[in-house]
Image (cartoon, rainbow, N blue to C red; front, side, top):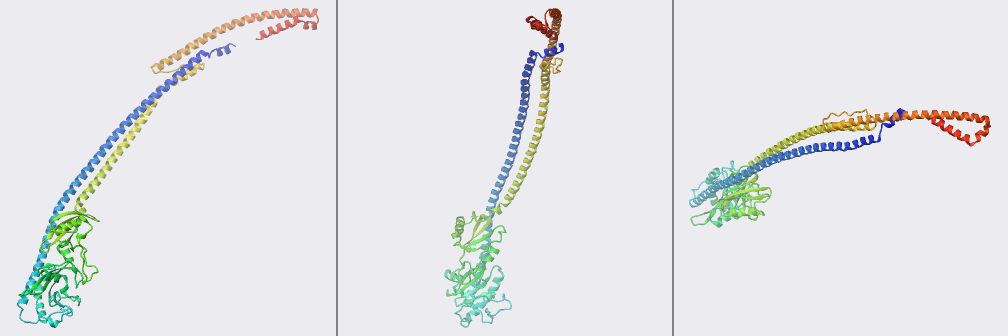
Length: 547
């Protein structure tokens, strides 16, 4: 009975309430400290992240600025180079146009001089006919052994050979001037002399002229006859070759100022284009030639097409162009001016430099693509762009490497901070957990348990307070147990004495009962109220004794 009462006396209500209150007070402090630690750790990580973000942005801005500066400097250098190249090119093209015009002028003057020589020879021939002598005249039906050894005569359809025999002997003598003139000028296609009587003496010999051909109705003849001076025709289809040619012609008069005929020299537009106006242009551009009416005399690709020799050839006229810039340039060229200008075409922007050919009143133009002129600058620009791209890629790689390094360092620091936070949290929470556990154990009744906390701060003081409280509670409990044990021992002693008195009374009652039994019948005794009372008292005594 003593042991059972002692165990019942240990878990005092006051002790349990104190321990629960300690647990309830410690848990929020533990959470607050942990949250504060986590908050400081998070703040540190955020600060480091923001610092890294700012540093990364600054580095990226520096890289972008460097890249933009490099690009700007490259573009400025290219633009300056393009401007310088264009200025130099304009000067060069203008000088080239002047030089090409001078060369062309010299060549055309040479042709004019040759035509003048042939005209003077014909005039002298008619004024002073040579002594009669035999010289065979070749027609188209008679092919000589050497076509460059003689000329060929072609008669108009209404002219009979016998009617012009005497004059034919004179025109045949023109070979003496035709051969040396033609031999000394590789630009000439034909040289010839056409008379008013209908004789055409043509060198070198050929057989491709139509029987219906009449030189007297051709443009070069009519124009020389009308002007009375040396002149140049526009492009027309040659009766022999079908190619486009131009003719320098001059009328021949006798001493009485009567027209004998017209001397002419042909140059193909292909020869003019290849050998005269394009001699210094090179492969980057091309040259073209226009007359004083804006008609194109020569240019690359110009041909007669499918036109016949007896059909008029309509030359391209730049004054009728759909391109206003080209029309303006053509107008300036017709006026005999020298200059250079830009002109937009379907295939890009081009320079046109032009200068007049004074002897023929024509103008030569040099066309040069702008892209070709600024090609070195564009090449440099491509190299600068490539170098800038390489620099940009290098900067981006460096920035990405730095970003990766920063992320790696950030992760390491994050893990380190997290580990330190966990360690500090454990260092902080371990004594608190020990306090909590000790409070629960002590609150459960184990007053012999002692909390072991060695932190040297308030937590250790609190643990010592817990331990002192447990010690005091155990001492108080032991004192209570001892006091209660003594009280119960006295009560038991008193009850023993009382029980002994009751036993004596019971024995006395039994004696009385036995005595009464002898006096009364058993049945009567048991029926009496007095006996019932005694019996009840006996039961009570027995019950008390059992207890």
